[in-house]
Image (cartoon, rainbow, N blue to C red; front, top):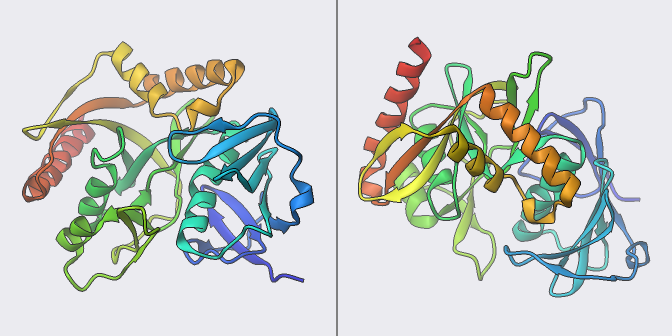
Length: 306
């Protein structure tokens, strides 16, 4: 019988038959089970739908989605409670674990009715601030730079948001890993930093930052929407534009059906009413990264005084 490992991520207690060195150990109430099963536990595919990140998927039912790679079944995500891994395909490497911890947990959180955004986030003074935007616009880079200044990492790439009884949004921490380009790691952590290549065909690396990781849920105060620019500048966003940005940055939104899109619209609208979203123009030069970090710090503390 496989060993069981116990973890805590996104506010969920996980029991897993495979090891995830990325995750924080925990033995709280179990909400999610990750297990290996034989290929016969994966029904015949009726329709394979291509996903823009290289994966494809099929939907067995509303709450049962199977992810595939090169036409082979990798894992199923069911009922917000299970991730079932094809034991014939499973290989314990950084890429496979990354797919489960990102796409797998991302859709599982959605199945549990949780708003999931494609964001990276850090903690400042007990509050979460997040960075959203399209790939390669610098979400993880900014989070790593702020973490280097002493602000705990909260999430990278997948950010889970829950609302309290007063509709205030809270972010639940993910795990202390960031996916970065090697030149970014060298800039924020030095040439001696340790990191793992995720896959030979991918340019990013898996990096564990030296500074602390936040383990508690935090109120979400600001989301900065990144835009490439020739300068570093923060400005206000119109509510309608901000809502569109939040919807577009909803994690794996291309998998949603009509009903799920309506529910996502409702949650994004609720989020916008209870925190701020701002435009963050970012100079792509790493030489301007420290200046950008200082600009974000100043903006947050000015906001916090109000």
